[in-house]
Image (cartoon, rainbow, N blue to C red; front, side):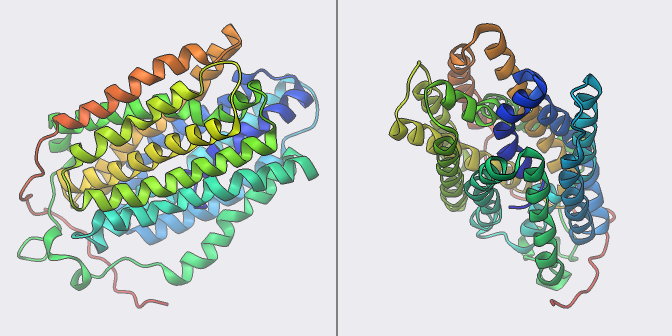
Length: 403
């Protein structure tokens, strides 16, 4: 809930009006930081995944959570001077957030869950990723309250405390399983983790089908999600009501996580993924036009969130089922890369369309087809592998007693 995956995306859309009022920045300039953050974080995802494979999830995730909280709060120190240099300083703070934050995302936490569970892995991952749903429910309303009461700088400082609070909890309660506690299904007879190497995964057509599917869905979703407050505002929805819609979107993510996870434990992923990933196409269609009622906006937000919850579950689940656990962190990091890159680029693409045309309708119409196409790609993956090779050089998991 408090990591670098959900928090930046849940607050930046609400900074558009105050930043435009104070500095006169365009919508594209205001949303560019999420692209900067996303690109840097995505490129570093395989590195943090490798570190989680090599050193364990606990040290990587905890240090990243700590650094992310401080870096995000530091954005509040952006100067007040109305100069061009202020924009670049603002961007610099976001660069730091991207460099240090990615270890606090599912790139690390999902490895731990995959090591604990196999039979009910989908549901376990869904419960893990409920954290991002809770962020979408809680953080937008909190951010709007702080912005309206104390200003946008105070919002960054206040929201930056969330990761630090979470750090205190996971420091005492979180650990990875010992070798004896791991499910036998992810190990060889000798007790080592099984799975293909990153090089082998990169030569597998299934890796690139998953990569393209993630890229398509993230590219269509990210801009709709980040620009949702502005899209709703153009249709006469007030900021407080837009925050409520974002909360409903979070409920959709919440439901998508659990339902998708439970379904993945019982049915082949293609039968689950395709219909669920078509839901945001309906959401994009509902958002077209000049006016929108609250019930329709709420439905659009829920469907968009439900599909987002499904996609996040799928990345972690498909990585473990099609490529094994021996090099999970590196492979997951490579599959997280299109998610981060296209989620980061998408808001700027949406904003550019709006800046040039004065409407989001053209990009929403394109998104309808992209959502359907991205979901259809997963129908081509085929059955899960029956077995994997043994890891050649597994790093022992340090023995730790739970706090």
